[in-house]
Image 1 (cartoon, one colour):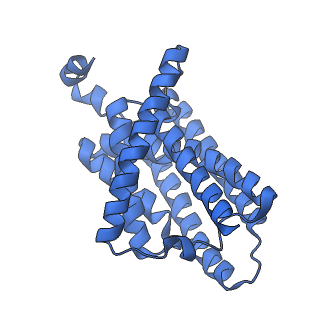
Image 2: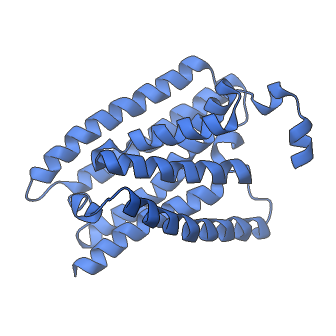
Length: 239
């Protein structure tokens, strides 16, 4: 398959899956959401008891709506939706293979993030995000639902859609991965400038995984697990 992909025409290897106007709209929607998220985060940090449940639900709905908009644009363009959501598993063996890849990726990426965090001199990240982390059983349940949503939706949006489009538009896989990673980092501006850099690097790791595997599904699994674990860890250590 790799040799076939190498010999494939450039038009096939770098085909777009949606129109440029659709991609611009997706980027604009994400930019507005990131801007509003930064304002919301600054306000929540000053509140004694921020309304996390409302923010969790709002974010959950927003991410699924963006995925719906992305899928609608891809379908209208006539491209396969599997490029965005990943190809369906054909057997239980394929499911466990992707779970194994996700687990190995998570271990390696966690170690790399720790090293990069030290190099960027990022400290107190958990404290800075304390306002957003779950408190109590109901918030933790919603957090896990949000984490699964983020794993599915953000990988579909940033790696399945934007990365695919950026690679097609630049005719360069490396450029596409880096542009998608930059967009992923910018979407998390509410966490602070240095965290944006770290998250962008994390996004590049996800991008490499998706490009190598030819699917976003291992990334979805690892992403959902990582986000869920951060909330559970915060809840446990708090008590």
